[in-house]
Length: 284
Ligand SMILES: Nc1ncnc2c1ncn2[C@@H]1O[C@H](COP(=O)(O)OP(=O)(O)OP(=O)(O)O)[C@@H](O)[C@H]1O
Image 1 (tube, helix red, strand yellow):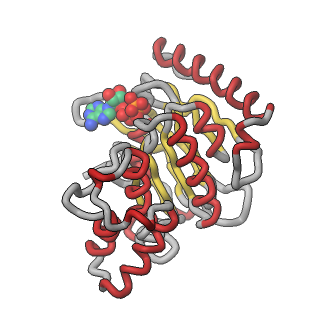
Image 2 (cartoon, rainbow, N blue to C red):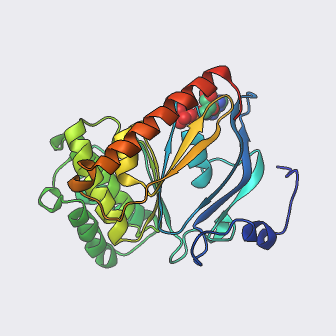
Image 3 (cartoon, rainbow, N blue to C red):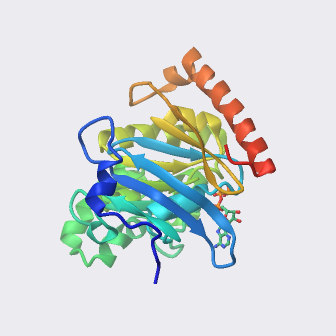
């Protein structure tokens, strides 16, 4: 059984983490840390409130705990100490209307023998949704990622970018409120990545998603995010936080702006500092 070092009532803990607006945060990470079974300390205690509707990006040197933090938010792993709240409650109520979560992995992980539409339908089948209800949702999700003409194709007939679109459609079909993405475009060429970033920024805006996104790309982080968490390693921790004060949705005009260039320069400097701190193992 997991033993919490300091257990406070949920309400009391939640009140300490208020956001700028009145809506409750989508996720609160409350002094959550992760020590793995082999003794490796993946994350030092983290406190973070993820606002409803924000696009939050985690960036930092390899091994700083980006994936570990994302997996904690997805409840794929449990903290060794501390806790997390989703919509001010525990994970048991995730999945209810308005409190749905979807995860997009780095690899598209499609079923090679199944057509695009069958791949996208999969999570609804897991939920035993009747075909008559599921089919319009599947068609809508495929249309949202611009693949309607390819819904009868097999994964082997698609490019890397198209496969990733299918993976995103498979997440969208469940109508998530919280979308978690672990370096989804890392394996794609820059042109395809930019195109998918353009679509993602519109999608998350249209659907009012709360998105937590992991990347190694400074440009992608600045383009997509409302807030960027720069992490450092040894142990994994939050190093600095950058707010990108630019209206959403965004377009190429933002990429071409002096503001974009300035944010990228500053983020690059912070990442260099985070890498130095990580190598030294010092906590800031
Ligand atoms: N299952 C595990 N068992 C032991 N140690 C782990 C495990 N998963 C991660 N770690 C360690 O925890 C630390 C954080 O790992 P994590 O994968 O979260 O980092 P990351 O920032 O996502 O790295 P990358 O950018 O290379 O993907 C690393 O030192 C890693 O070796």
